[in-house]
Length: 327
Image (cartoon, rainbow, N blue to C red; front, side):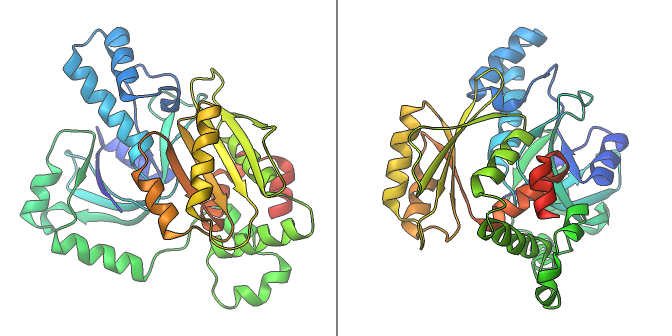
């Protein structure tokens, strides 16, 4: 888990983030998804050309954009700061970077965030942490060595708030009434519903992932190398600049390292630098270590929990068939 600091430019931006459960990132004249750029260097070139700024300025903007779109992860913690305000706010990053072309420029680039503690008096935190928060970058990382910060995070982990999402209350079917009495989280209730719809043949994992991909603004197609035990989906941005390989594994038990070797070979064939592997039964430690060490392919490992979180965050944009089955 990484701790991030986000500096809102003013109180208006700060309040929008809190009210809408998001973190917004406004790139200078950036009117396309950050995922359309293969590297931070591509962003530097764009900013130099589009904004007529020097290399150092363009690099600073590009680095922050790259952190926001690629390095920040669901589960990371974020402190929302505004130098004009005496208050701070703490939240958990709840999903991947997204881009909404229909929104205003300052709202188009965002990540969902669960704000679990708001209105913290800046004067009440340790001086060392106040110094760390005084930096001028829009987005930066800080070390988690503050006793105050550790205390807050421990309290959050012991008693996290429920996800305030409309779908959270909609995904508890009558058949899971007994499970609900056991205080299952919205994600766990949704996982039960997903499992039920897959077993009765209403949905497949490929149906669900395809709907998620479309909701993120990508095109998707099933690849000919797919098999009954290993389905392959190729997601691509409208301009084809970004391609993501999805591998759905239907084998039982934790997925082993050999599966990642095969995935890398396929990613190379389809010229993908980003990928997601889905396994209902999880992944071995060896495979997870290989993914963490691989620098050529940015790979994420998804299980039922990650799938449920994506569905909750994107529910309003999903295919009607998937919405109906999971409501």
